[in-house]
Amino acid sequence: MTLNVLKQTSWQVKKQISVALLLLSFFMVSCSSNHKPAPVVDVQGSVPLSKLVKSSLNGREYIVKKGETLYSISWRANIDVSTLATFNKLSSPYQIFPGQKLFLVKNTAKASQNVVRDESGQKQKQKRVKKPVASNKKQAYGKNVRGEKVSKKATTQGTNFSQKIRNWLWPAKGKVIEGFSTAKQGNKGINIAGRRGDPIKSTADGKVVYAGDALRGYGQLIIVKHNDDYLSAYAHNDRILVKEQQLIKAGQVIAEMGDTDAERVMLHFEVRFRGKSVNPMKYLSK
Image 1: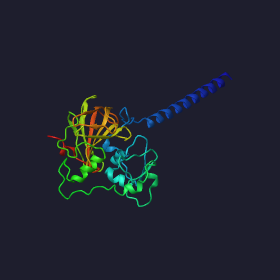
Image 2: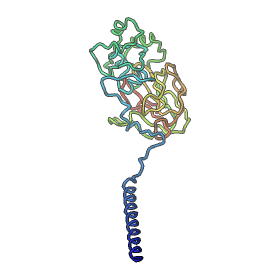
Image 3: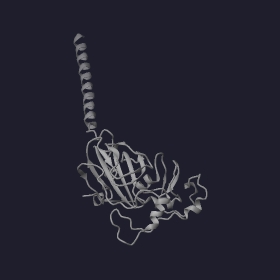
């Protein structure tokens, strides 16, 4: 009888060992199948501008978010700000508010919800807001070829900076680590390497029309209006030193270099001509 008990006990021990080994094997297979290298992401979880699609606007309509200006929206939509204003029956200084619906394309329907509420007689005023017709003459880099009427209009709107850009200064000292690309997903400016805190300077006289971080992928961003044709932008700043609507001079320090929404410390610099990206290297002094 004792022998039978020993055999039964031995059989139970073997069974328990088998079950334990089976569970251990399942556990090891499960771990090996789920063990994959973690995706490489920088500390801020950001992606390069060349790979960032969500910063662009391609639809027919857009709802304004807090912190945005008509200039920042036109920048994302690759539309000249005066054209965007005409689409939405807005006059200078282009006041918009969060929750407002903007048309990104020409719309023949009434857009009363697009007009700032405290402006009376808006409909009559907007008939005079038209995008100036470009001259047939070849556009020289940084020069205005429209004539005297444009200059008078600029004066009446309080923009006392020059309509003609005589010289484009480099916005930062450093090596150009990525150039301009005409590809659809390509780099729409140039990237200049540097150290955190390096001074960022305005490339020409102008007025700050945007300063903030509402544009995803640009980090701390400054947009400067130089005249009715040209805008410049300075992205990934560590610290912004100017405010919106502030008049600035060429060579004035407007920010400190950083890596906000970027993979490294650098300046992303862009130039827009009538809303379209152009190669900054064609403008900057040699």
